[in-house]
Length: 291
Ligand SMILES: Cc1ncc(C[n+]2csc(CCOP(=O)(O)OP(=O)(O)O)c2C)c(N)n1
Image 1 (cartoon, rainbow, N blue to C red):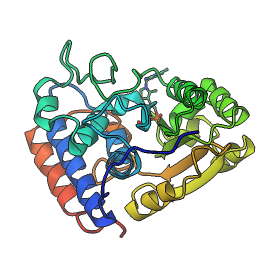
Image 2 (spheres, rainbow, N blue to C red):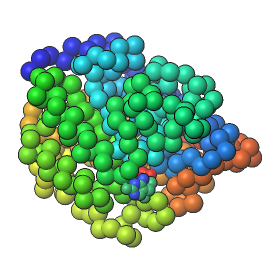
Image 3 (cartoon, protein in one colour):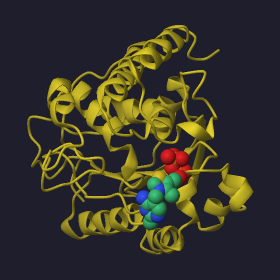
Image 4 (cartoon, rainbow, N blue to C red):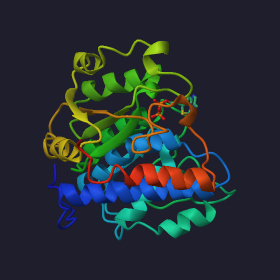
């Protein structure tokens, strides 16, 4: 096993990361206010702090050196949150936000509603069909082991998505293959597309299910940047033999009061008036991240 050599320089403080998450939410809303089609805004806002913690703090990836074999890999299993990933990547310096806004969702755009690895450098996996990302991440983590690479593979999964059987095959395979280099992050917003999660599927006792499969389980408030950073700092060595799941307790629509826990906002678009209302609601949360 080699050493983790990719230097990403000094990382932002928790307060700076909170500002970056605010910027991410603002840009998401602005795009949702100008794009004519629907944006998966609810599950974007629930994952905005997670994306910020991963792209601007946790993942060792250099936007100027995308082919470096030691870079951490990221798989967006809940592929419908692609636009949130694009903006988090833009904030990290992969490309410009203006470029996303210019073509988002158009035919042949690099910035599709779901991510496409052949269209956009920096995207490691094409996803969107739920239940596929974690199995792909298991294969990537296993491949890293075979090649003697020391990086991690991170995979963001929706909690509703874990109703797919393929997720649990991957969970079992990861433990069976001793993939300590694999980190799943669950956006545990307790909502599906048109219903609350527990109304349709019995997920509880959720963390215990992951423990039963032999995973290292870290539970955090997914909107508390300090807790997200601490979870990343506490990750076991990639050479260890237990995969980790960070179960991030989140709120769908987080940051915009009229979207929070509102089933009407799984996906939608904001007109000019609603954009202003949403930005005002977001502004009123500023500096109260841990309230
Ligand atoms: C295999 C598959 N079935 C259905 C869909 C349509 N779909 C898109 S998002 C979604 C809800 C997913 O819920 P969850 O994973 O909890 O995501 P979040 O609530 O965080 O957006 C569904 C059913 C899909 N993308 N793939």
